[in-house]
Image 1 (cartoon, rainbow, N blue to C red):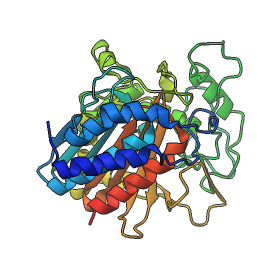
Image 2: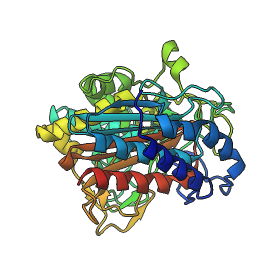
Image 3: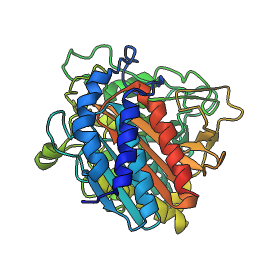
Length: 421
């Protein structure tokens, strides 16, 4: 266990006290659910957590899995993580940071409300829409191996006897990966049978049937519309190009090369025991319903902080070695400048789209950043990479709260700017 100095104890305790009455609230749209009712954070809800958990964590950082010799890195991540945790109102929060050869992983709170168990590097959670940049990694890896081209038309990978409608020009894999295909955000099957699983209405056959009879709303590449449908179709195309089901291709092209041993689309029994409990937008435990395989590329990945740190290191090592797949994955392929419209792709302070990544060019002391957020199944996540600075940060909170999206974005980016100096 890593301990901090008494002086730092008092600083963090003071932060805790102030944050009780200073919860930051901003609106952000969630990838899969409808926007919730107005956030009604109550100080009475946070006071017990702060007195029994936050202050003890402030003096011992008990959920620490610090593996960094760099004290400045350790302290910067610890302070940022504590503030994020106190602002989130989540039962638990984990932050992982990578800079060069150094790794820091910190956990705060509890793996489930009332469990008394602190999250750590092996705690399991959903990364939600951060899964999309994993699909981007697969796309880059297959392109580097000449198994596909980024500009291949989606129709090339359509199921037998299926077709893809066009608008102006063929819809490509790159259009799907940059959310510029002109497709709807969601596409539930209107004839789906009622189910307790909210994701049961998302059906592969209906996706392909629909795309065969509906033109994209805009000429591809002229606007961005965040589309989970688009990444579902992209996942199918990647599976076909890779010659196996999507989970197998993901494992072969990303998880195994990155050394990720605890990341999957379907949990085994041992992993289920380590799965954290997240809260839904109404602060109730989310049942964590499984998604169908057509959603694996858009939101289907489970992981751990240990594995996410390995993944960030893999990305950064690839950038340092100028590997072709890494160069493809880290390129801004669609600048926002000149587009007719930019909707739903984290527009604020961003400059364009990569392969699932939202790209922000250097400004105000912050380096070039690749970012992706997500929210699903009781978890909100955010990943940021700065390939030019050898830096990566990942945060996951076990509560879906739309108001905290902007807070996570701004604090993680502020941390990245601090660590990049």
